[in-house]
Image 1 (cartoon, rainbow, N blue to C red):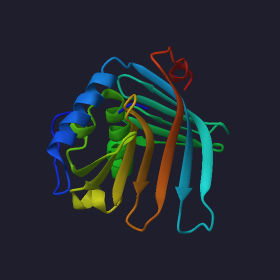
Image 2: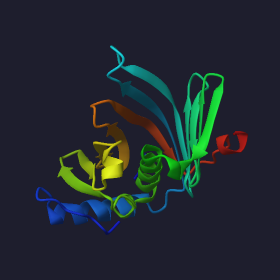
Image 3: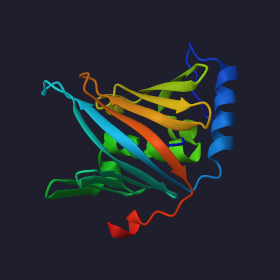
Image 4: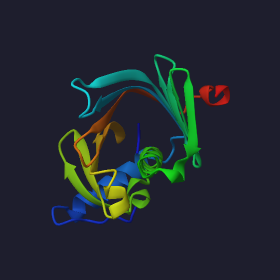
Length: 196
């Protein structure tokens, strides 16, 4: 999954690395219209003794259409306004803006696709770490309302193609959801949005 110019640099940030990252991200994502890839979702919840993992296929299509289709038939579908989740026989629907965690998930996933990750996450402090094969961004919320639901978000990008390899959302109590993305394909027609 592939993930702008407003960037709140904290004391550990390096301005040169920030600009290099933004330039690489924008140049490598500007022509991407669709993304299809395999993913694994791992949840670690304090109420459960074991982690829960599910696999599936991730679809993204501009503008802001996201579908995580799990192998068991469950799914999460997001647009700029709506969120729909199928879990077993039950389908839940809500407005994205009504839930801070969903809103940030949708904003971050979309921003990662379009190269606008810094513009779209200006309500977060950012710490950028550059390594030989990857960039890692650690984001912490500035607003108390968001911080009550999200402790931090970690994004890991592959430096070869600037695609998102991992996204981890951690809650204040330590519970987290980790998404890992594999076998990415770009700019192919996606029919799955017509089926749901």
